[in-house]
Image (tube, rainbow, N blue to C red):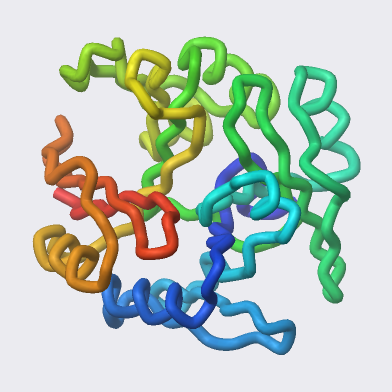
Length: 249
């Protein structure tokens, strides 16, 4: 069984300009992040020498449907073919056929029953604990129950972020694990649709935010301090993909 079973293990940036995206993220994250070209034209992403993701072209059908550049989180499962029916039975929608790499890695993009896009994969990358995983959803209680049932996640602490949108429910991969993300109801915020937002670790949040704006990106929320002392900001890269920045306490 993969060490990433039931956990986010890979982050795919689907964008409209591979080279521009590579320059942006390497400038923002500096020595933490290394990108290199692959034979198929995509870019692999290594964070502190661990492969954590890739930069790929946004599929033409996604562009035609009006989808912006975005980060797609991949959740590791033992077998995509075995797990996919359970997601579909709960009301998820499969977004195209299962993709299989030359190495045999399977990836199935889905829209979960509450509207957020995610992927399941049998990739054997290690689960990522230094990222923060935030689900903006229509119903955080139902979402937690769904992901708990399908993946074994468990509720941890919750707090009121003071935004008038109710509790921010944190979760862990397992019953005895540390919090690795949070779920919040975004339906009361204008213009916010259901989505997963991934926070990337930075050494100094102020410097990373300055790089974002200097390179043509946008900061739309933050800096904000979390109850555990961490500082976060939400931003958008020059191609329109939304991401979070996280400075650990």
